[in-house]
Structures are given as structure tokens and as C-alpha cells.
Image (cartoon, rainbow, N blue to C red; front, side, top):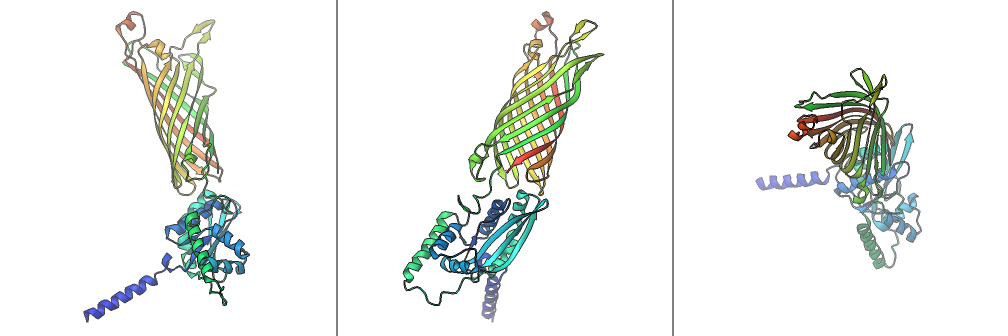
Length: 438
């Protein structure tokens, strides 16, 4: 009795596995993903191919189909032509797609076509605000939405009067399978209608306005030195350029240049009752390597930077007055990491942290000959994607240079100011627009 129960249980288990919905094992024949049309279609097609590969679906490349269409003089755009080609390549399903713009939204219609009839089994329609958001949604939802349709695809019936040379037919099929394996298992090739897959962005530029706040103060001050605080507006710029950008899977596509700059305007320093002309600007230029992590990104930066904050002398009633605060002119390196973390389809958070080894400090070295300094920099941002080209970005950043002044007895004898250390801090709140090229 127990043996009968076990046999019955095994039979039921096998039947349930064979009839389980949504598995690639139920699919009959291979699947080909034809070239998609419309804005951002290459991204969408790539996500469809990846979704099928993730489910271990047997794939044929578009190169197979094009070669068979030429050999058989069949039109892959007609139902009759699809049937002829499907019979030759053992195709159970064709997938074709089109992306159209509907106002500010992109809509993708992905058609699932039966290999035995050449006719549509149904379609999957998905939308997104831009190519990146649309392709992300397709990657997440295509298989779940289309798996049942794909399972309905069937192979064409054999021709009523087969060719008299079946060996040639078998060789062609084997050659077709080998070509499909060696080419790209359905991934687009150079010159393919579907494009070469997802492309890495070659360029982005951010321009914005910022409020810059600076604070300079001493530690262990024995000379009654002036502290300093000022706030004023500035313009900021950040540029990334990847000269070898192309296929998103290529390492060279993610090696590029970074340029940053800022310049304050309409700033005067009020020290006591006197206003001193003030200028502040800086730039950095260096290399950046990015690591795409889905819709997020991690960056590694190494750059050379210059930052200056100069307070000029002022005249009052014909007398030239000195500000009593040293101007700074930093030459330093900028080494660190930044990251963009996707928050849904249109929002992203940015974080960065940098170490700033300082090579020179400007007038501080004239006041304090033994001075040395090092800095740190950090930022946080929030961006919202308005379209495939533009994002609005709000951020706050903090930069701090810490000085060790190391006064000596000789400094005191020569009348130099005496202090143990100093800090120079900058806080900036920014609002800007970012242009990104696809």
C-alpha cells in the first residue's frame, strides 16, 4: 500500500512540475528578438534579451534570421515569411517591439509572435518617463508579463513534401545552431537593426548657483589674531567627459575626465567698520572611473585642484588698511569616491568623500613659515530627472582645511604671530541643472 502511495505521489509531482506556469522549460523551439524601433529602443531590446537569458530561454540571433531570409527568399516582416524561416531555424516565438513618445512619456509595445502561424499571440505594453526609466521597467516586468504568451508559441508543421536531400537540411540546422551560439545568443551585433545594446553616457554637465559660507579661525592664539566669516553667492560647474564611451559593457567606456570649478561674485569682507574687496574661486581637473551598478553608479576620482580666497587691502580717508587675515591659495590633490544611488525611476541621491593632501597654502606660509595643512571634502545631493536629457540637482557640500602652525622661539623673536593651529571651513548649498547625453 505504501509503495502505491509513493508511486502516486511521484506521478502527481511530475505532472505538477510539467504543468507549472511561467517556466522556460515549457517553451517550444527557440526565440528570436528582432530589432526594435523608436527612441531608446536599443535599451529596451537589450533588457528583453537579458530577461530571456535569465530564464535560460533558447535564443537565435537576428543574424541567423537575416541569413535564412536571404537564403530562402522569405520576408521576415510577413506572416508567411516568418513561418518559412521558423521552420528552417526551429523558431517557436518571434519578439518584435516599438517605442513611441506619448507626450512626456515613452511607451513600449512588445509583440509576441507565434512561429507556426507568423501571427501575434499578444503584446506587452510598458511605459516610462525617459529611456532609462523605460528600460529599467522592461527589465523588471517583461518576463512576468510575457512568459505565458511565449509558452504558447509553437513550431511550424513540417512541409508536406520534404526536400529530397534531408542531410543538407540537417547540416543547415546545425550550422544555424552553431552560428547562434557563436554570435551572441540574440544580443545585437554591429550593424544589427536593434543597435549594439545599451550605450554608456559620454558626457554630463552641471551648472548652478550656490551660497558660499567661509569661516577662518585660530587655535591656541597668543597674538590676538582676527577670525573671519563671510557669506556670498557663487556659480559652480561640474563636467564629466568619457571620450571612449560606447558599449556599456566595455571598461574603456567608463574611463573619463572630470572638471570642476566655482567663482564667487558680489562678495566683500566686513572687518570692523571697513569693507575689503574679496575674490574667491577654484577649479580641479583630473581622471574619473565609473562603475555602473544598474541605475546607480560608483566613481573613483583622482584630480589636481586649486582654491583661492583673497582679501585685498582697502583705503579709508586716504589710508591703506590691511585686513589682518591672510589670503589663502591652496594647491592640493583631490582623491576619493563619489556615488549616485537610484531612488525609484526619477530620483537619485549623491554622496561623496575626498581627502585633500595640500601642497601649498598661499599667504599663510608667509605668516607661519612652519605651517602645514590637509583637507577633507564631502557632499550630499538629491536629483530629479525631468527628461532623458535634464535633471535638477540640489546639494550641500563641506570643505575643511586643518593647519598645524608649529610656532618656534625664532618666530616670537622676529615678531611673527603665534598660534598653534587654524581651521578654514567652507559650506556651500547649491541648486543647478544637469545635462546628460545618452
